[in-house]
Image 1 (cartoon, one colour):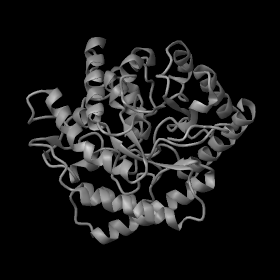
Image 2 (cartoon, one colour; image 1 turned 60 degrees about the horizontal axis):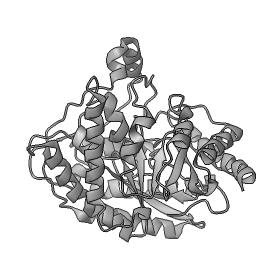
Image 3 (cartoon, helix red, strand yellow; image 1 turned 60 degrees about the vertical axis):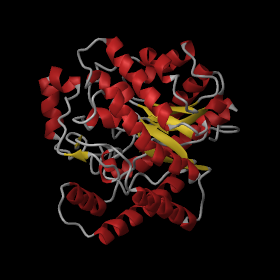
Amino acid sequence: MLASATRILTTHAGSLPRPQELVELQLRASRGEPVDPAALAAAAARATRRALARQLECGIDVGNDGEQPRESFFTYVRYRMSGFAGTSHRPPVADLVRFPSYRRLAEARNQVSLLGSPPRAVGEVRYVDRASLERELADFARALGEQPARFAETFWTAPSPGIIACAMQNDYYPTLAAYLEALADALAVEYRAIVAAGHVLQIDAPDLAMERHRLFAGRPLDEFLGFVRLTVAAINRALEGLKPERARLHVCWGNYQGPHLFDVPLEELLPALGEAHVGALVLSMANPRHAHEHRVLARTPLPERWLLCAGVIDTTTNYVEHPEVVAERIERAAHALGDPRRVLACTDCGFDTSTGFGMVAEELVWEKLKALRAGADLASARLF
C-alpha cells in the first residue's frame, strides 16, 4: 500500500455516482423484474469507464471502479453466496426514533435505498459464484488499460462480515459468532481474489461504529464493543494468509445527513479496531460530528505501521469544501499522527453507497474531488 512519500496522495471511500440508465436497470434487477443481462453488463461497463475517467481528471491517485457494477456496497453478495432469501427488518438508526421531525424530513427526501430490507440467512452461507467477481475484476483491468492516464495504485471494496451479519439477519446459525465465521470464510474468497488481482483491499465496515446506534441502540456499551471485537476477529479470519499492508479498513458512523447524536466516540473504538490485521484505517473526519477526533488520534496513536486515509470531504452535503479547508484538515491529521507520510486525503464515505441513494449532486461530487486534490497540493507544499 502506497504511503504519501513525497506528497499527500488522494483517494476516496469507494462508491461514485451511477448514471441514471444504470440505476434504473439495477433497481429493476434488485426487485426481481426481468432485465437483459447483456444490457445491464454493457451499462455497467460504460459507467465504469466514465468513473475511471472522472477520477483521473479530478487528480485521484488511488482509485477504483466506483462500485458501478454493484447494486450496493454489500447486498450484492446475495447473488454470489448461498443461503440468503426473504427479507430482513433492520432497526432504524436511533436518530429517527428519537426525533420525529427529523424522521419526517428524511422520509420526505423519498430516496430509494436497497440497504433497509435486504434478504436474511436461511441456509448455509458459502461463496458459490466466483465467476461474477472474476468478470468484474477483468472488466476493471480492461477499462484501466484503455485510460490515457494511470492511478498510482488501485483499490477494490468488499463488505465486512459484520455489516452482512447485522443487516442480513440470521435464521440459520446457532449464534452470531457462528454466522460471522461462516461469512468470514465466504468473504475470504473475495478478499484473496482482490489482492491477487493486484489491488489494495478495502473492507467496508460501517458496522464497527454505526451499529452502536442501530442494532445495539440502548444496550450497554460493553456489549457493543464485544460485537466489535468479535467482528474484528472474523475479519482477521478472512484475511488469513494476506499481508496486512494489502488491506485497509473503512469505518464510519452511517453515511446519512442527520444529527448523529448517538454516535459512539472514536476513543471507545480505537483499542478494538487496532486488533485488525490491516495496514490502514479509512476514517470519517470531515463531518461536523467527528471533525474534532484528530485529537483522539494524537492521544491514542494508531498502530505504528498503519496509514490513515483521513476523511476531509463530507459526502452528505452539497457544500464544496474550499481547498484551504481541505488542506487544514489534512494538516491536522498529519500533526496528530506525527508524520505526513502516513496520511492520505480521502472522503468520509462513498457518494452512492446504494444505487441511486447519493445525497450529493453528481456534478458536485466531481467538484468535491477536485477540491480534495487542490487541498492535498496545498497541504503537501506545507508539510513536505
